[in-house]
Image 1 (cartoon, rainbow, N blue to C red):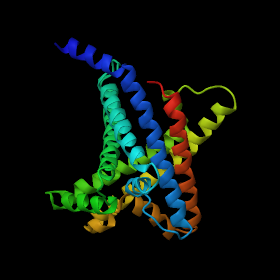
Image 2: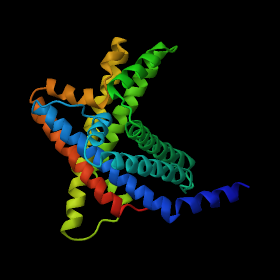
Image 3: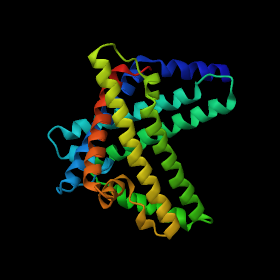
Image 4: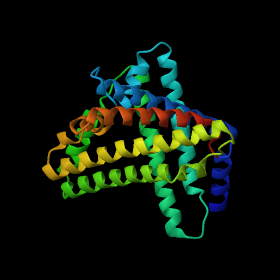
Length: 267
């Protein structure tokens, strides 16, 4: 019975429709990050905006053809999330500890893709959502639990760790293991975009995690403001406006890299 289930999952993972859908998922994920980067730069120069998934998808909803793109985003990221789940449980290797660490990482990616897909569905259905409010509500619920301060702090530390992992993945070019990079100028451009993009996204995630830790330390859920608040918090630092522009440009680079990944990913 177990062998039949594994064979069925492997067949589903390798099916052409699911792999094509996963590639579409990478492409629309890139579009979302590109828009977040643009909004972040707009915030830095004083135009304003909500520099997170909700802000990006809200802009998409208001653009010509935006509704169609939103539904493509829902379908693409849902299929990418499903492919990621199958990939997590079909990973091979004799070291069980390393295998489960890999699975947890892959399932985390799947959860992130499915979360953005759900947010896109909200906008595609004609409703709206606010990431800052949702993040603060989550923080408040966690703080209300027994040991909530510790739980929220660990949650924030985990996000910081993910951010650091993104930075390391970019600087060491470890992301190249998951793509087939072509030779020549196009390949060099893809690698450069990946390095810059992973580092920028890692910095943004690390700041998000720090804000969760601050919310836990101060027992104040309003301190946890998600990606939008994390990016805007950068402006309070010395040369913060310049730093926010650089991170925004890096997120744009990550978005363009995801476009390359849609074509080059090893699926």
